[in-house]
Image (tube, rainbow, N blue to C red; front, side):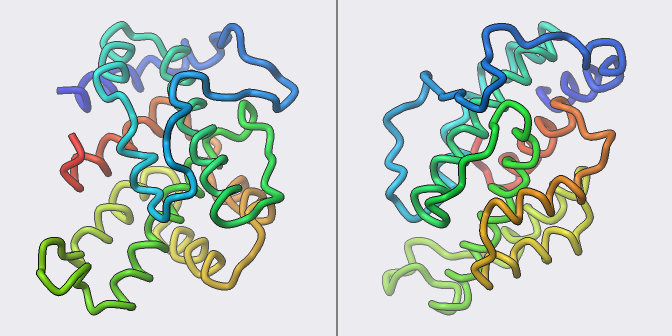
Length: 202
């Protein structure tokens, strides 16, 4: 149902995409006040994505409010930026309001990177009791969802760059080039929703 609402909202995005997001700084000093208790020193960025309040996203989508969807995504980007700064590149300090879409793309690519590392390291088994298994289809959830923003080969390129330790700031510039100009807050929200639905997060 949320996907249908988001898709219908995407049809009107040409009219609403220029709507101002109020009360957000433009100097890169944005911080997410809603979710300040996540354990960013943890290993898995999946927890950041799972922290999305899907009911709030659904509510703002149903109210046809692209500005509020943008604000929700900026908050998510803030969490991703903090995670990457804590766990991958301590120098990563982009302007979150300006680059929230690119930061989210990096977060999705980093999620795939982490899952590939886990799958390669332990033969698709998280522990000897078989309580959790990484299926190859889970990795495809990311590729199929993010295809609406950038190409599959672009995601693979970002994943390989993470493997090679390329700085997050450099990757942000790469993501900016990769990201289609038509990408809006609505299309980013659709990608996140489809990915989470595929993984069974909501």
